[in-house]
Length: 320
View 1 (tube, rainbow, N blue to C red):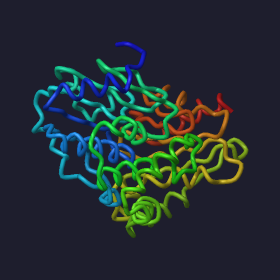
View 2 (tube, one colour; view 1 turned 90 degrees about the vertical axis):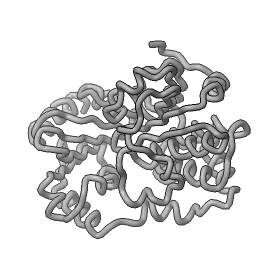
View 3 (cartoon, rainbow, N blue to C red; view 1 turned 45 degrees about the vertical axis):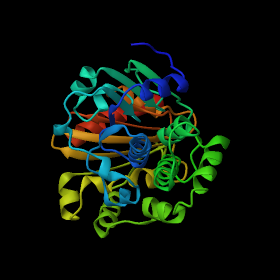
């Protein structure tokens, strides 16, 4: 393992040297993971490469991102000639297929998470990039094929991970990339509305439940909420409908850190964190085996939900 980057030129060279390619995003994929994976896969497919994408099932709102037909079942993937891990901070986030990654003839790790462990044979990690989709845009621009669907997927990933260009990771290059992608006549309004302004009735009910259960701690510096499997079932929803909650919590005035917990099962709790300037929630997540960005991170804790909250609060108290 080497904690240094290879160049984008080297990454392109390695990709061009292989024909059978597996691309995989992180577990519980979000808009950026889906957009980046499907865009790169579609571009390589247009070049005549044999490409398989591994992504776990995701929420209906992400159906606006094209080329999902390239996704395959992980059971059908045996040995990969080239394995590209995309938008994944470490091998443990590879959806339980780390063995396929380790047995691949060659591996590439492309990511933008501060906590990335440089686990590939070749690595390109740009922690100041707004998104993995922005990196894929850099990778393929002028070198690999681009079309309307590929541009749509990249645009979706960029706006998702920037919160619609609101997050501090948004840079002038981010806006330049978005503008260039819009030049492919993409349905940018539809993409934005589907990702941010559309929801199922069950998602609306779950959000209401989460807001009703919100708690304020440490003189208002911490806000948190939690959702149990029972809550999700009572709202006739799924845990794919929880993405937006943490950002609403973070928006409460004077909040420094926001936390959202949900039960994956009785002994596994997913925790999401958001932090203001000066509060490194990536370091917080890493204490529990997770990671992410300085202002946005998460982890999975093997404990009942009440115990998980107690453990996290103890660490946050030290931070505050």
